Amino acid sequence: MDGIHRSAASLTDLVQDFAAVNRIENNQFSYHFEKIDLAEFVKEVVDLFPVDPRRYPMRVRVEPGLLVRGDRRRLQQALLNLLNNAVKYSPRGGNIAVIAAPTKDSEAKVSVHDEGIGIRDEDIPKLFNKFTRLFDKRAMNIGGSGLGLFITRSIVEAHGGHMAVESEWGKGSAFSFVLPVWQPSESSSSTTTPSSATP
Image 1 (spheres, helix red, strand yellow):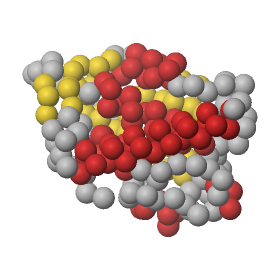
Image 2 (cartoon, helix red, strand yellow):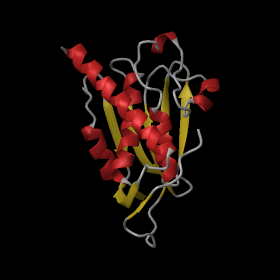
Image 3 (cartoon, rainbow, N blue to C red):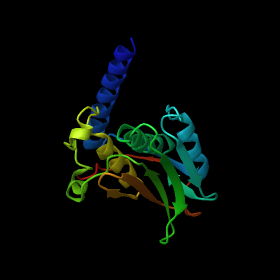
Image 4 (tube, one colour):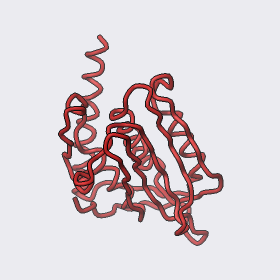
């Protein structure tokens, strides 16, 4: 029965990813912006993430006082995508770290570090394209639509931010998104439908 449940969950995720991409490409991905305390937000999302800490020890380090203007639900989707990838590509017992901190450019950066299989330098530019799956024998049995990072980048860019990747082949990766900090002059909430990101 566990196998049936996993297959059903994978199919549901696949359908949701395709639906999200369709909305992004048709400029139908709406956003409701509000002021978000990033430290509290990251802790809440990690608490929601369904992972056994005995299998994948997870460490969270956040700096208090970081405020961003964001859509809580969309940013949750982006961070969950990164956490899901970290678990999928990590060995059992591999440590995962989630860090939220300011950058030297006065932005806010959220990073997910893993001890997984890593990514070759030549593959990094392809990661955010639709349907990208890296063909490596160590990842052949790992499921997924190849759409998660495309969706994540689209969400982050709609917030005026950008993605970053650091990886060492065979040792692990760090996926980050960087967001502008909250400005006091900004409105507390608004709804917009931005253009989709370029693949």
